[in-house]
Image (cartoon, rainbow, N blue to C red; front, side, top):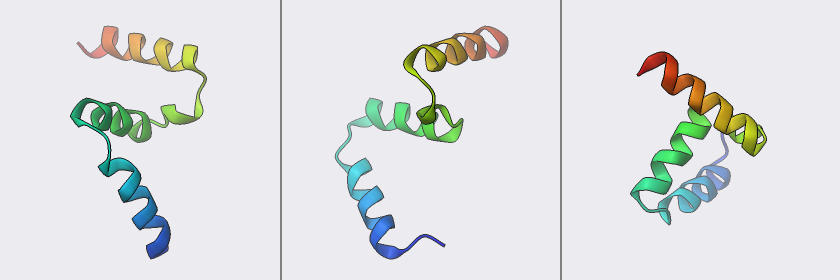
Length: 53
């Protein structure tokens, strides 16, 4: 269970982003890329793009 204070903090952090930043943030969180290094994120994104587009 997420505590209300933590949820509010996460919501306020996402609220200040513009549309593009929010989409990138959601992409990183959805696929778990936020915990990878920058080069691993780029590699995953390139492979994802090549396989599914």
